[in-house]
Length: 314
Image (cartoon, rainbow, N blue to C red; front, side, top):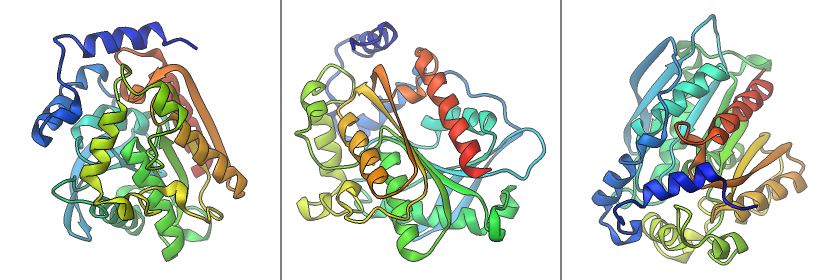
């Protein structure tokens, strides 16, 4: 399918002024450029409460932002990890999205301000995200979290792009370590493999927002050499045993370099006996999930994610 007209208009606005490619910028310049894209996100939907807290992490305290929906709880909990190639992004870049997810599901959303590369390379972000998920489960009652069978809290993990990578890897770590108990994985155009030769990388290498060179730059800043980049905790598609993982919703976009690895992971999960639903959005680009101010498909995808979370955590 051709690029959706709304996505084309958004891309045209992004390239106004001929901005330099992300991989040619310094880390600080890239972070500022990422913040400058927030015009694409509509204001988040109202929630009952938003609170910044501190959670213990493996490498020090973590900032987390907790969104509590309106109405009467207790609620399921979604621990959310923002995208940005493990290098850019923060609590603010997904603030509107987390408000909307909390409202539409409804659930308590715990957004995690994990440490970024290159200052904190692999596996610092993953270890921090795992610690945040364990903290959310342990403190579920205080957070307004509901219990599932056996008295365990109903905790899901989710994220977009690099955040989807971290969510998938946290689910693998939780299985290996016997907890926390994860009820669902929300994987939004996740980074799943260190492989730049898939058809989607070739077809969408340039001109659709996230580029092939940009992803290489992110990987190089996050990992040190092939031994780390191919570690299953980073390239989760290389994990030989995916059985026993939580059900997953995998969302991909047609014109995204990451499309094929997301599809491949959904297929691999299904073949391992994991309940999985895969949704590919025709005509869409990487990052569309949070572009609620300019793309109708963003709101539709959030509705799908909220519906899936309701079913998985009920």
